[in-house]
Image (cartoon, rainbow, N blue to C red; front, side, top):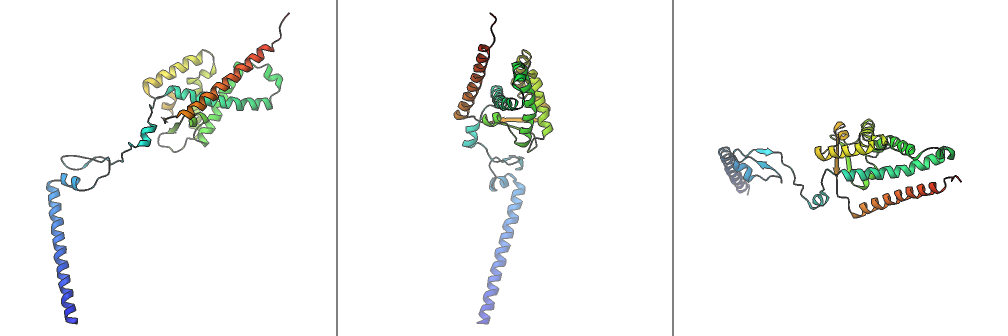
Length: 253
């Protein structure tokens, strides 16, 4: 039994050696064949979706990348230059902040001060103080209510977050270059000029200076409807207050 077992083991080992030699010969033959025809390697080996190979040498021309043409990406695909979406997102931010600012000044400032302050002065003050609040939101939250509602993403190229100083300088440039510090007629010109630059260059001057990247996604009917209704109600409230103040003006007899 021991003799039979030892003979059987030798037979098995001999067969294994012959198989290994055959595999080694086949591998070396394949390697020689691939050296003669490198394209064969690219054709036989599996490649990731998006990989591109040279037809002469078989080497990768571009790094392999996964295809992103999914249904979800296609559904969110929108033009990446949208000046009016940016404008209405900022108007939403300013409307929300104006309500918050009005509550604060109503609490901390006497009513006599508010009565003697013009509406234009309050508008300029709201626009200026928004610089600091927007900078805080971008630095600590990463977005603003208007940008979140209208699905606008703001980021610095190569950074995961926005430092406060970068956000502050951007908001300051928007305040001056975009809104002309809230001054009548000046703001009309600056807004028109900013839209023209964005349409022609694909980027605003403040985003270019701060190396900011702005991307957009599809807004959707419910988000758009909510934004429209909110802005209509907000401006309706302003008109109502103006009419009430006008009716309360003293009349000379």
